Structures are given as structure tokens and as C-alpha cells.
Length: 197
Image 1 (cartoon, rainbow, N blue to C red):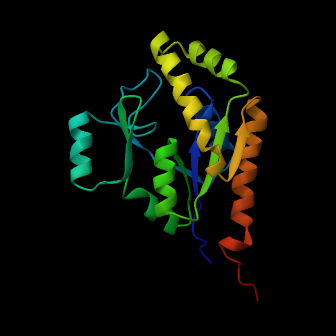
Image 2 (spheres, helix red, strand yellow):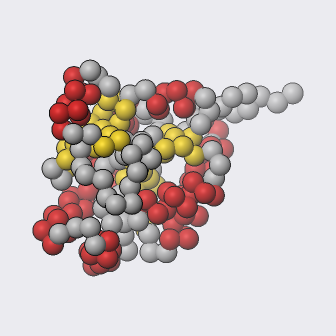
């Protein structure tokens, strides 16, 4: 029996460590696959095209909107982010578990399209720690850091809409929590009971 894959939607304010958690979770689980988002923001030095994001100009992104190539999209901190339409349905039907890293507005849109998706919100231990982590990255200006902390406070008001919340105080514990969520949801009876004979 080819069980349909699980769609896991992950949201977190910038600087909460979601990328690190997911990288470690992908190493620990052999059936997790990214749905790579499209963005108009510039790539950071450590990011690769097609792995972290598909990096597009604003004009290219607008063309994708016109051609209806995006499942959903939104503007966040002055840049567009969107989910390519074609990958998610194909992977889910093939029984693959898909992780979609997305901001809160996009997560609301995905929930309407995929009501049975599992939504996970990652929180920092405190706003002070969040600000410290953003500074440590060394990729943001002072203005951007203040702006991102302000956005984080707004994003956290959406936590009540999520199925699970992980507080990333310790990376190893956060990864264990994430992989436990995926495993529990895969075994949930509501997702289909295997037929035995």
C-alpha cells in the first residue's frame, strides 16, 4: 500500500534556527523532501540556487504569478516568496513527506489548499535570544534586525493556528521534537489504516 505523503508546513521568525533544525532532521529521516520556495530576495553567501530557494528577479516572479505557476505567494520584509505549484502534489502522491518552509501568511493559504497538512511553529526561547542570533549571523543591518524582531512579534500571534510548537532552546532537543512530530503524524490513524491479511 503506497500511503500518501505528509505535508509538513514549518514557520518561524527569522533567526529561530529553522534551517539548522530542518537540515539535522533531514539527516535523521530518510523520507523528508523539501518543497523549494521561490524568492526575490538576494541569496546569502551560504545559499545555493534550487537547494535553499529559487532566486528570481521581481519581474520573473511577477511572470510566474501571471502564468499561475505558484500555489501561493506573499510579500515579506520587502521581498516576494512563493510556492511552486507543480512539486507538492507529485511528491505527496508518490508517498513522499514534503517539508514546506513558509511564513505565516503563506501557511494560512496552504492550509486552505491542503487542510490535512501538519503545521509546526518554531519559537526562540526569548526575544533577546532572537536578536542575539540575528546579530550573530552577520548578514543583517541594524535596521533589518529591528525590523525582523518587529515582524517576529506579529508572526507569533499566529502560533495558536498551528498544530505543534517547538521552542528552540537546544538544537538537539528541537530536532528530536520535529522528527517525533513527523513520525507520530505518519502513524496517525486519521491518515489511513493499513490493510493487513
